[in-house]
Length: 122
Image (cartoon, rainbow, N blue to C red):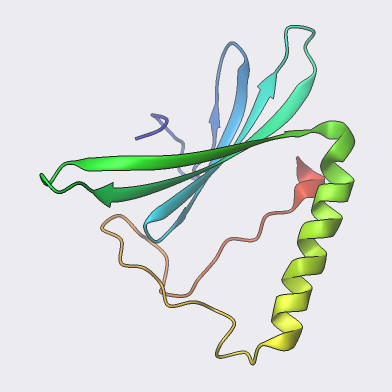
């Protein structure tokens, strides 16, 4: 697991440069929205996609991809994300715009469910 000891809502506050974390589980993938602090006590966001896969020998490994998002870019990032999400939703019929949910041993969401992320709250 990426972090330990989340409260009931899935939030965790951390010490050091890790300030706050929100995991979003989505099938075989988990997205981590992590607020971190610089040495000058300025905040930035890291978004990590972690996907579990099975090696040939049966071991589980996690592929991780990370982006860093700085506060001066929040509005442009959120606007761009909303624009492409709207583009997809407008061009696909409702029954096609949700991909089939990937099976997950620890998923507590219904198939096809998703979590909205409001970047203005970050």
